[in-house]
Length: 252
Image (cartoon, rainbow, N blue to C red; front, side, top):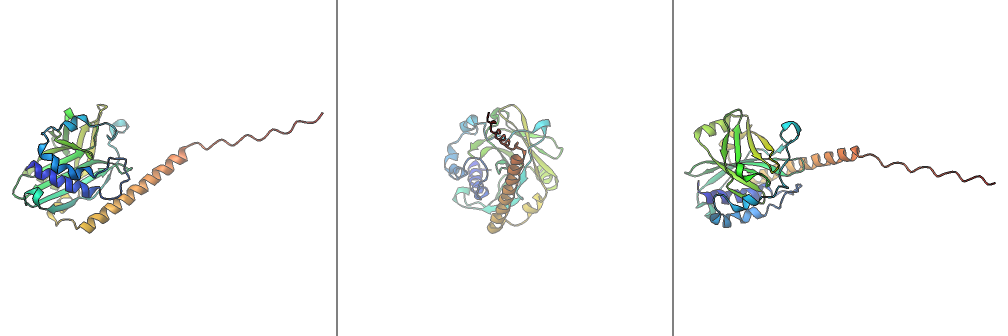
């Protein structure tokens, strides 16, 4: 697939994904919209990726467990225009976020008209670039690809999609994205594949339905954030009661 087409569509889709009010402490998503203009000049291994800061990376929980994520439904967006050489491009996408709203895994299947399908994964800034990423469907053999480029929303890696991989995506249960953070800890980010086939074979998501889905996700994220805040407040020790005043000294 033409790298410029993928980047242009990714910029459009990222803008849609993050159009809802942000609860996260992640960078502002407006920057990816400008990415397609700069993309043609970017090398395959973008220098910006090698300077990715570590503060946005999710932390693996104790015992090697994956961080608890909340997921958007699988959605399909189609369009064409000058940025895609007037070719129809459809993108089937899903993202996983922490309870504070920060996106930590985005999966996008690009299907350009008459061209190679590509599965793009995006992980947060703050990963060790030299190790690249791994992709596992259910208990299958892992595939590995280097990072292509980094945007403020995260760093991206592209996987060519064969007929066999398409079959696995449509019949599988879970897709797992793996990376290594700056502390050298492997991070596993699972995304359910339920309803992927339905989204892939079905019509493009209606923009109003897309907005409604994002609104519901944000409401759920806000609810989780409020619950976490209340738990934190409840766990804090209450302020010690002031000592009673000493009785007045007896007069001699």
